[in-house]
Image 1 (cartoon, rainbow, N blue to C red):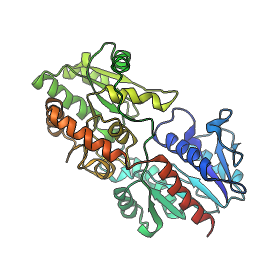
Image 2 (cartoon, rainbow, N blue to C red; image 1 turned 135 degrees about the vertical axis):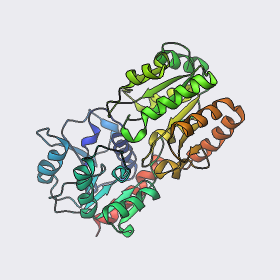
Image 3 (cartoon, rainbow, N blue to C red; image 1 turned 90 degrees about the vertical axis):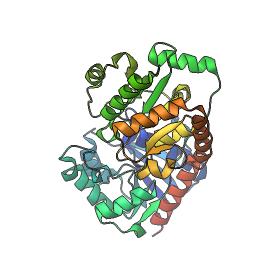
Length: 372
């Protein structure tokens, strides 16, 4: 099999999809052997000895560096010739590419009202639809996303494989109080208890609603906690202005969270008293599963990907409203027995998710397409 990987998401700050690609390459490395070959296409060189990949892997520089859409559609097809299959792990594919393609769709956020700006369904949403229809096979991370792909893009379920994402083996409980205290001091400037949100601060994740709910609990229950928002502010939320307006400016911390190694975030989950993901629309959430694997009590919304992963394990609410969020936060923080129950359930649930299993199942799909 001669496989190509569209890997532009590997460059810059590696968030969910960048890490997804890394895990695929890492665990494919265990299974591939000559004459199978994988070419990693990108617009920047990979570091020397990247992931200690075997001779089955090579990288090809595709230049010049353009916007991702232009790079993928104008340049990649010229370089990705003579492949058995092209693996496109980030929603879209080169629409002019003549060969076989496996496409990964992580979520269908434009199906959710107000998840993006008004023009999004008419631009990116259209490209996602065309990509889904052109692909030979589609991989999604959960059943709700499969249903949304079918409904939103008009693609038969028979064309879609559901392959759950994983959690790194490094994510687990930490009992080292010295390390946890140092983590709190590093991010909050003092040894203060905190509630954690981790991920891109996008519109669909309802950051203003979370801030308001946090302010309600601060005033009503007089909790000593800070709120740590960890991730890039993609929607340009006026966090400082909102925090000032709500009277919680001294208790809200935002960090862009640029980690050299993503496993450095493990103590951040462990040092938190609570993890909150108040998303209106989400595929399989890596940060939610990582928090659960660390045994951090989690609150999320019982819909789409988070509901499929967390309902019955974490604490789920039906709608991400200020009232529902503030009530849930107050309840979980005030009930030690509930927190222990959530911790036990979440740790057990997290055992179901393995990047090795994800990579193996994904490779099986790719091989089937390559052989057709």
